[in-house]
Each structure stands twice: as C-alpha cells, then as structure tokens.
Image (cartoon, rainbow, N blue to C red; front, side, top):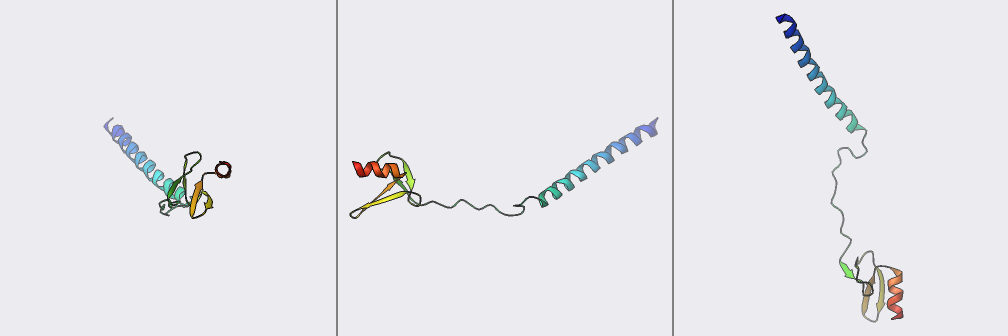
Amino acid sequence: MMRAVVYLLITVVVLALLRAVMGVLQKGVASLFQPDAGQRRTAPRSAGQLRRDPVCGAYVSEDLAVRKTAGHKTFYFCSPACRDKHHDA
C-alpha cells in the first residue's frame, strides 16, 4: 500500500514538472512569432507646442494646426472651418 502512495506522489511531481517545462517552451516559441519580439518601445514624439484656436477655444499642436498669417501675427486653428469663421468675423 505504501508503495502505491509513493508511486502516486512521484507521478504527480513528474507531471507537474512536465507541465511547467511545456509552459515555458510554449511561451518561448510563441515569442518567436511575434513581429515586435525583443524590440523596445520608444516614447511617443512630441507634436509641438499647443496653441489655442481663437474661434472655438480648442488647443491644437503647432505641427498639426491649420495656420493663417495676418500681418505679423500667426493664428492656429483646429480645422479649416474655424479658420474660415475667423476670416468672416
């Protein structure tokens, strides 16, 4: 009877070890097929200084804004529609 309990315990331990090894192998193989495996992520680039749209009040990046220059002053707009409304006013 004691022999059967020992065999059962050994079987449980061996199965647990095999399961752990298979899990590690599966994760290793899966990481080989990921396109960005091993690459570090970089911080997002800044899109420039924020400027306030004089029509709607939205803040928009200088790099992405629709610009309009009047004299020596540059206005930054969130869209062509806001730029046109400012022109009409």
